[in-house]
Image (cartoon, rainbow, N blue to C red; front, side, top):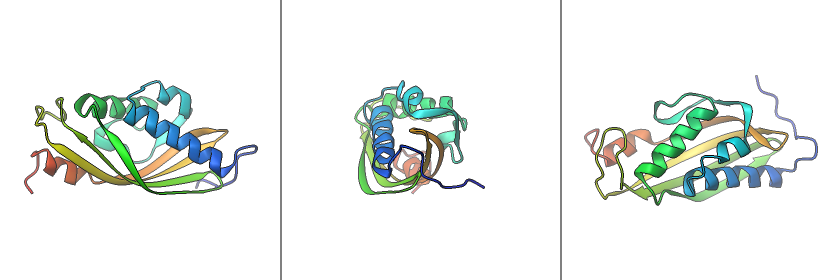
Length: 147
């Protein structure tokens, strides 16, 4: 079981800033180096999206996949909560499909993906992620799964 304690010298606001910069860097700006900057070497993704691996490279793959298929991918933040070393975000990400994704040729459709992420930080870096994304809704919007 993971113990929640405040990082020495890290405030909840600093932890929120780290998560915000990571999401903005990797998914909104497509900076794959954000993985190296913000994720700890021993990072574990407990709920990896889209079949990627549960490590840093999986997050890099997910970021590259979304930015290649949806160059305008961005998140609208609905709630952002932090306590001690835990940061929670509830968001809706969206973008217009301009590249292939999961075998689907570009459609030009704008899709949205609501979700919730929980991050745990240690020494200013993200060490764990738990999340729920509406992947089924995304697959329906792309026409992979019937509505």
